[in-house]
Image (cartoon, rainbow, N blue to C red):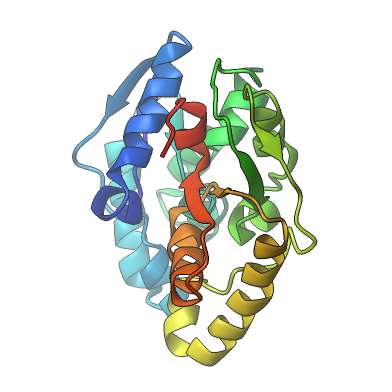
Length: 240
């Protein structure tokens, strides 16, 4: 299968290894992976700020960039939700509506693509550590992804999956939310971070790099040991 990578800004600028890990997993499964260098931000910051005209311009660019793609796969539930859920709303009633719906129909979050589209749960990974999984809000609430990442983790050799008692609670990042409401954001991080810490796991696995940033900041401030790692990096067989 020909798969186009959608690499969000945070992955491109701060965690490029996540994109490489996605590529390794998909190529290990026998697929051809392509990265289209003309791609840019999905437009979510503008959209969430109320600058919808600017967000539309970015969305239309994405439609042009991924024109003709067989499948578009991204390692971020948040940014995939922007393309799949909000592009059709943003471009409704415009000449680009049909194209937005077409792109939405073939855009997938990484774990969802593996389990729901390819029917794969065991990718041949090994990760000899205890982990807990953090559900990012957009992946959980907009894309309805909950079991796919857990199915993939349970199939990883030598991995111990421990559920936390606040699995569905937000970490408090929320993009611009953490900037506009830092005190609330920090309080939410306290709840989620405390829950994750109580598992006494070695790693916190996430499908969203922005959540990793928030949680890493909280654990660093508390001088606590759990580290975050992207699901793709676990599945690629890395031992970060």
